Image (cartoon, rainbow, N blue to C red):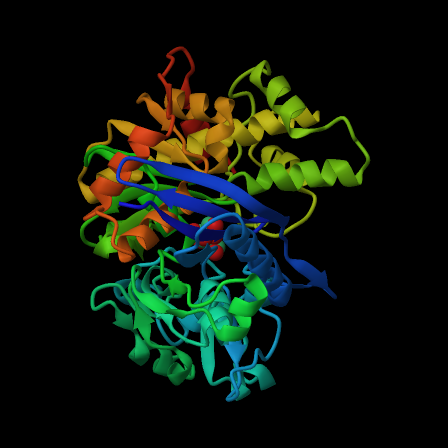
Length: 488
Ligand code: LFR
């Protein structure tokens, strides 16, 4: 049969990509046809997304996919949590905020006065991240925008709405809001009511794989094709990335390594124990009813913000390849910091913050960009180790291989350090796991013979290179870990 060719739109916090994904019985091919920079826009200390600008880039990308071959479907995934509010006419009321905005400072503590953390966890199963949608919404209570809001659309759903006119909430991303019941797989309207939130703005839920609607005629005219169906994929980028993990069987862990690092396991059912809550593990919804039991680890954001800081200071020789080459030959495990310290969440001077963290815990202070880069990578690998081991214990599972996907899989030093830290092999790649997961879920909705995740992963394995990193011994990760837990 003819291969299926779809547009997989994968939006990250620092760049957006529109790929043509071609899926045949034994072939799977990805071609990047449009890439654009993305980033939150600071205005008077607030952080916004340029949603309309992103929409325009999505249109440009779709037009490019349509211009270069057949186009059978379109699917959008992006980072989670952030949303736009629509008025009664379906117009966007304000620019969506970034989850790194300061407006949720102090909000979790306020929420705790009404609903305890344990109650929240029992319903949503989510890690306590200050930017979860529920906290963002509480921070907006009483504002004109929230008062006027008739509908809330998460970012990929908002872009899907602009393409089709159909409003809805795709389940994998809805599961990151804090207002979604991980057991019943419906909105937690009681929780919303207790917090005084307008629960009626939560749109109807839809499953990944559902056909949403064809492109609106005027959109079709702009991109040069008519009637193309837009398909709900795992619209949370991490959900699509986990689909794209080329695993063979059950005893694997994954790290989806991009701006964030999402570190964990794929499970059949949520783990909502007191131990899981205390360890602050999340239970997000995956494609085909799976659970993504994972931890948000601060990720390569800390490194990319550092590079940005050095570029601003005109230390122009500090490119990423040079830093990584230098970091490779730096003394290992010299300085370890808690890479998940909340102070690393907001944009700013990361190198100074890393030095402050080292100072506080009595670690040697890294002085050069290369030493700081090494500190970040060692600390990341240590966080991967801790959290994969924790996830395995909490879920009662063994882990004998770690799949590292996303942009970070191209960072050989990070992959090697992760294998060393965990003492198990790391299988690295594909870098574009999210776009592959997006494209495969669309292809199945359009009739491809991909009955389950195993079939999708099998196709990725047969068509994409995966690099294997064997663990090396010799470094003392145990004492590095105890330095981290005893310090500060
Ligand atoms: C990764 C990601 C994470 C989510 C964070 C904020 O891109 O989607 O899974 O926690 O961004 O939305």
